Image 1: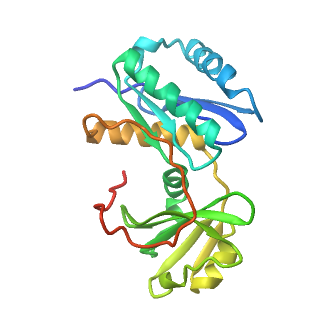
Image 2: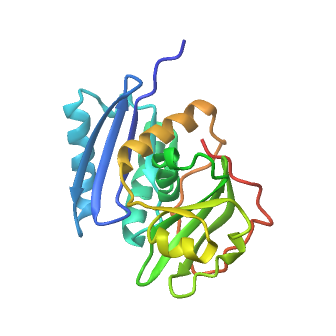
Amino acid sequence: MHPEPTILGFDTSAAHCTAALLKNDKDISTVFTKMQKGQVESLFQILETLLKNESTTWDNLSAIGVGIGPGNFTGIRISVSAARGLALSLKIPAIGISNFDIMHAVNQSYCRGNKVKIISLKGPGESAYIQVYKEKMVLYKSTQIFLNKPNIDFLSNQKSIVIGYKAEHLSKEIGCDYIEKCLTKIPQTIVQLSKKRLLEGLETGVRPSPLYIKSADASPQSTLSPSILN
C-alpha cells in the first residue's frame, strides 16, 4: 500500500497569496493573505512558515499544486514559475489547477440534474470568463465574454446551469437555471484536485502553464480532444 501523498498548493492569481498543505489523507492546513502587491517577495516566506508549522519539510512533499488562473497576469506567472522551479529542484510533479476547475469542484452539489455547467468567473471591466463542462469533460474552451453582449444563446438548447459571476444575468441569455457564487476554497481545492490527478496518473513531461484568456467567440473545441476532469 502506497503512503498518502503530501501536497503543497498555492495561488497568487488575484490580490492574495494563499497556500494549503495536504497530508495524512484529509488533513489540510491553509493560509490566506490579502495582498495587492508583493507576492513575489512573500510567497516563499508563507510556504516555509506553513511547512514549519505542520512539521513538514520540502523533502516530504509528493507534488506541488498551483493555481494557473485566469486572473492577474503577473500573479499567475509568479506562482507558475515558483511551482515549476520547486518541481524541478525537488524532482516531484507540478500540477496546474484552473479557477474554472476550482469553481466547478466546489459547487458540485448544485449541478445535479443539469448536464451542462457554465462556469463564470469575473473578468476585467464589464466582462466574464466562462468555461463549459458536460459531466467530466470540458465541452467548450474557456473564453472572455462581455456582459452587454455575451453571445452565448447557442447553449439555450441544452439543459444547463450557470454557476459563478453574474450567473443570473447570463442565465437570461439562455433561459436556464443559475446560482451566483464567488470563487472560494481556493488553496484547499488546489491540493485536493492535485491529489486526485496525481493518484490517477499524470501525463509525462506536462508542466503547468498560465491560463491566459482573450476575447473570442465561445465555440466547440474542434482540434483538441475533450479534457477529462477529476
